[in-house]
Image (cartoon, rainbow, N blue to C red; front, side):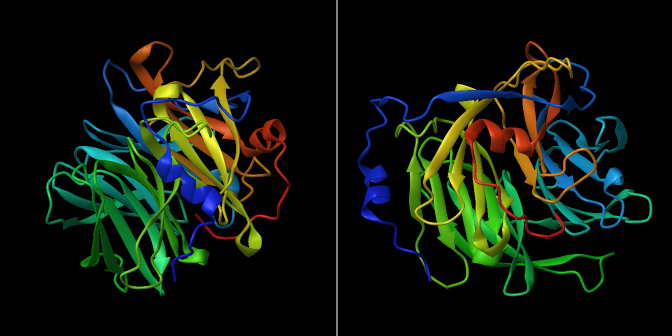
Length: 348
């Protein structure tokens, strides 16, 4: 059932958004190791990445990235674009195993994709229409043995769609639950092993919800402007997953151009704040105004402690030639002095 948060964490409810207290951490800085090829043009085009780890040859792992005007980009680990799927106005994307799902305004629903192990080809295999306007954020998780997509909306709703992939050429999904928050949601991430989902309410903070028990209520684990480094808008959320429930939750504090790291387990204590500055060897620019992010704790070629991928609003100027930046997770561990942990072996 839902874990009751200690009094120290529950106090985040009492902070006023009108007053920004002193930050509890020094802001550290790292740099990206490489970046994806930029999209041409001006405007807020890209949004959210998702990492697919090849089950046998990690050098062939992929990064999927959403294009809010046109569809879905597919990149190699060196940032080269390999494929583009012209499937409409895609906002967020997530992956479990060889299945990806994206929120798609073009069809007002979820678009499903299959990734082929043999050659890394990504194929669009169908759509699920939703019953609300403009599906926004999306994340995938295994709940009670069923692949479940959580879909967030600007009106504060989050829907849970259970899928059946007995026949992966024809996905089927049904709405099994809806929860309501007071304002706009976007980022979310499932913690499958803990039966939890973390949800970002953009101007409020981060919520934790136990999805293993019906009718449980969410708990606020951090509020914007609490001193942890979290600021509006709360955007991308992802997990570095260690064994036995250990690991870290990472959130994009968009307007501050920074990222906040929390312990994965209650009371979800903040562990530090970092920004992604300009690179020296990689020659990449600083990361600003990040929307989506994704993390894989599995070792992939060039990233033995895992890989983090983030959206960059400007490359280098705001809203110009946007792209995604790749970060070695070990650089986050080192700069924040995080305790080394053994990663989960989940294929993400």
